Image (tube, rainbow, N blue to C red; front, side, top):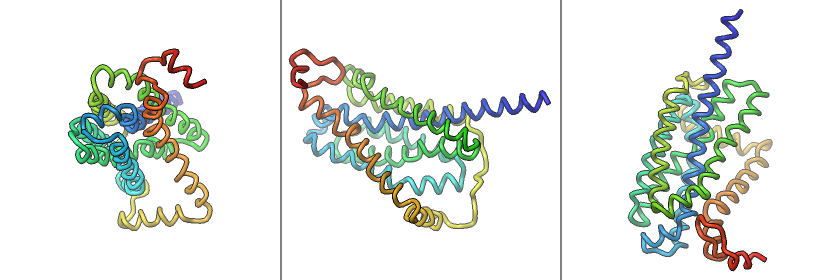
Length: 268
């Protein structure tokens, strides 16, 4: 009796560590998508293009992110959470390095595309593992915890990221993210168990993706899908692209230092 309860406790702790490791990938995703918004002026000057033109290139990330959702989900059902998450984290590291080495609009767009594809499943991975391993009640608790851990990336992409950019340049944000991707990948490799995919079948990946699209277009889910198409997009545009440049260029705020009294008067 005692041994079984000890084993259950060990398994529960192992699952918690695995979920936290995967959730750190989502945290990295929320950090990476905001780097251009915080450093757009410096990046545009380095690339010798208008900030508006550079801002339009960041849409490559979001289109790649959205287009990869269904293929990544199909791969997760086919191969399991651990190998897919490790592949995505490897892609994130390469995308961050490519973005850090970008010398112009074309190379920046390539880096954004790589990051969009690689980070598309960072939330899906811990959610899928939690859904497979936890009861409905515990899944509700852990889905909130996963989102909370992931949103730490938004905090890191505010003043801490601004400090890094002001003192070490915008490329340092991508270097640090690449290092973070390596650390998260090591944590996933060590902590996330290797489990067979429970939903693997003989159908082709294309037929699986078509079935997901058909399910998303079904009557019970149409409203949820329509809401999802605008809710996340609004957040990404406001915080991940438009908010930072607007505050700096229109309201005169600096990247990381508090506003002076003359700037504060503009808000009154």
